[in-house]
Image 1 (cartoon, helix red, strand yellow):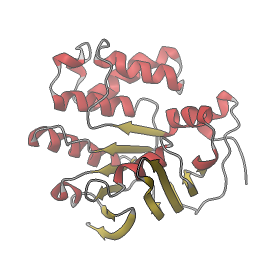
Image 2 (cartoon, rainbow, N blue to C red; image 1 turned 90 degrees about the horizontal axis):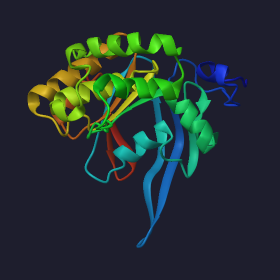
Image 3 (tube, helix red, strand yellow; image 1 turned 90 degrees about the vertical axis):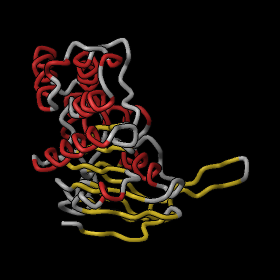
Image 4 (cartoon, rainbow, N blue to C red; image 1 turned 135 degrees about the horizontal axis):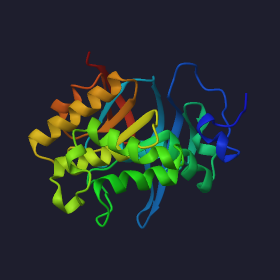
Length: 250
């Protein structure tokens, strides 16, 4: 079965939906990712099979260099698999060209970074509006109200007109999460989102993720914090580019 992705139909882009496994939001099949380095070929992912259902909160753990970030980047289309298949909500991400990936990502995935990546010359609300302007998921007249609603959801409405330099690390990450939600994506990915935060701010961010999954979002979180990882619904352990173990935490 093939059709236009529903979030992109109004853009008239030929981004196709193909049959994946029913009921899955993320479906990776025998994914391999290699890089050419000065020392030769490095294989970051070695035959990854991963399935994630909608509304799941999944933590991904492993040592540095184990393949955690590469796995997230393949799911979001930042990296392309060398071989294998990547489906997100039935979209074959591995088949999209660069332009299609950018359009698809704008409406399908919210990406959250460890170092926030907020534009320093824009206020909190302007950072969110910029993401909405690019995604074009909402009409222009609707965007300011939605941006403020997202900041309110993060407890940041009173910081809407502050520059990133005027916010704490935890506050910047809350704005970054609001920005990731700007175009109402079903999937959020977070690569070490608490790694640059103090324990109080890290707890606040975790609770936001927990609340988002309770409302139907799917969260994939890479973390070095094993205690934090165990509080997610499901934990995936990666070592040497392979999924070595999985745990259901609750």
